[in-house]
Amino acid sequence: MKKTVIAAAALCLAAGTPVYSFAADPCEVVLCMYGKATGNSGGRECRSAEKAFFKIVKKNKHGFLPNHTLKARKAFLGECPDADPEAVNKILSRYGKVRG
Image (tube, rainbow, N blue to C red; front, top):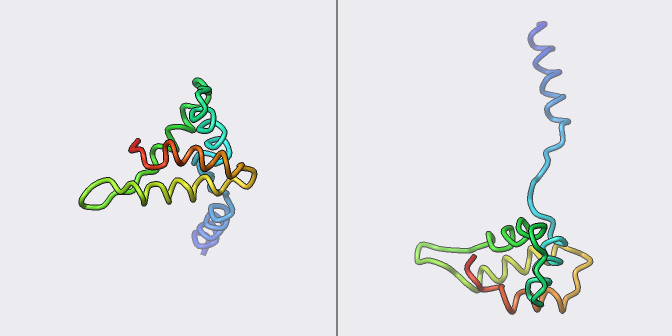
């Protein structure tokens, strides 16, 4: 009985613990990639954001799918509510179909 109560308490504590995601912030990616698209490098601060953007790659058994990659990257950048649509379009026109 005692073990059951302890196990139930541990389970409740584990269920209440937040799970943190270490995914890149879409707004940071928009900012850094817009800088890259306009020729202004963000330096070392933007490396992780650029890496996150270029890691979004769609493939199938035949290889790289540029149009699917473009759609996935567009959806990711669309998660930033403050992103300027013109900036997003500029990023996607330049890097949307590029294999990272």
